[in-house]
Figure 1: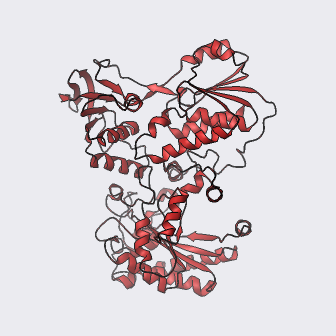
Figure 2: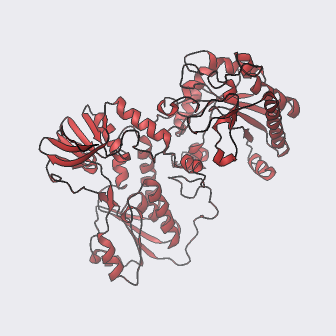
Figure 3: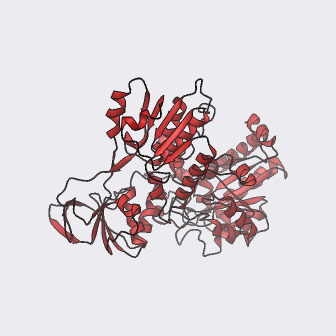
Length: 569
């Protein structure tokens, strides 16, 4: 830790260590023991209720915080940030909902604030006034008996901690002790790609009006111009960046120079990986955490490389291969780069996808990759003209059409049809089949165009999108419902007719649902028509099949595989 702090400070930066305790948000599977909290109030994240701390244990935990701060000082840190947000242990003591104690550690406001106060006082006493002590807390807990934006409690907490000697305040939100907190996503702790940028800035602005010390705003801030506007409008004194720097560690330097930034798309793959106890990963930054192992190195021999398909996988492969010194030609049958990213960027509720696509376009333009748009490679002869030594096939996937009566009717569309031709006459009443991620996003998009949309799936509403990050899932479902999408679960499509569809409900009864158009969002299958041609007839050529043409998956896998194959050749 000493080496780390010295390295950071050598660049003129101040380096603080965040210290905290998860309290009732701890999981037995991680700690091996029952979680503890000021009161036995169950977290919405875990099944087990925490054990209520004894007064002696509370005193012991305060000492542990002080020891942590002392170790930080000894390691050369300039200070610590005391984590009292998200209803971790300190936040649980502060919260009138999570702290039901009636002793000296709970009850009225002053007693609830005793725990964080004694921690901050103790740190300042042992480490001195020059040792920075910041405090992070939740200024909104999403329920009436907790801290909310509409009352004075957040400001009261802020002024209290200012008087205790904190040097700054870091303002966050949410409490996972809240019943059904994931259904209340106005100020999500981990904003999703569906959340507006700076979703928690108004909380910092509210706190800043009450204190004279610096206030930090957070909440999915990705754009430097927006970050600067927060400061210029005096809504906060600093901004906190987390996932933004995972996506592009050089964000600040690029912002200063005006260079292209690889923006975080707030997909929450990073957060989901950590919660699954796996190595930190990022959709847009395939080498995060492994920069030394996966560093791009010049190839020992230069080869002529043809990449077929300019979706995210193909673009990433072309860029890496080119950076390694290979001569790369990138073929795309469409007249625009991006593959399905082009369609994914169309809905206005996903602006970050458009930013990522723009980054690829501009980065390719600056590279030595020869981009050939509107060029379809469908035969061996097309390839042989290029004399390639390496072929990377990244042609993606195509819609999977279920084998049901009426699937070929004119009123049946795929999700790609919806986005490829936005002027298509599809009527006002739409029925989307398939409540996976793409089906849900398509339903929201169509409903935002003043259409009446029904979404059917064989799963119930409670069962859909369960493999998505919790914040992504709740924000998407809530947004669909606000837009008027009607989710009809436990229904299986049996037949498409001229004026609607026939579905089978749970229990076996059939139901006719009238509609103008049926949009199939029933998954994708690999485009593998080139596999036999290239594999069998080019035995002396390196041929790689990557991305969705191997197995239809998500953006994360596409970019990862593109980077890997580009690094391999």
